[in-house]
Length: 102
Ligand SMILES: [Zn+2]
Image 1 (tube, rainbow, N blue to C red):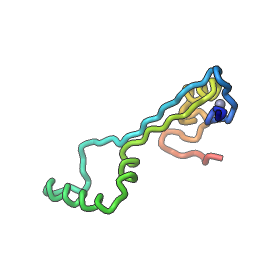
Image 2: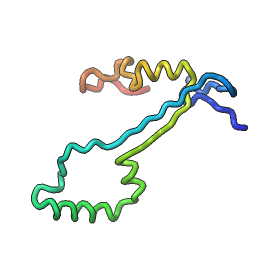
Image 3: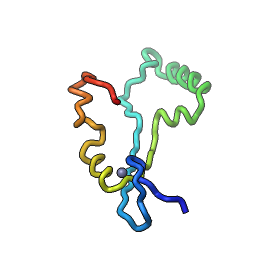
Image 4: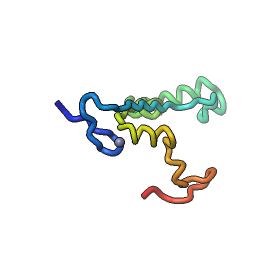
């Protein structure tokens, strides 16, 4: 049987130990505005469909919706719940990028 490890820190999580499932769903937000449809809506939709016909359907699907599942130990889960985007580290201030991730 494969050992289960925390997908954040790598700590082994033996059978029966406390572990957490983190499910992250990301999906595109549609604000009702279609950039390609300045004129006739039907013509814009046809243009859009023609463009999409050349793109891999999986790629289009991933752009619209993704669902990821992670197993975390208690400590990593606590850190994730407290600060899921590591804002505490001071990488961002308002909309301005202050540093890089290293
Ligand atoms: Zn961990």
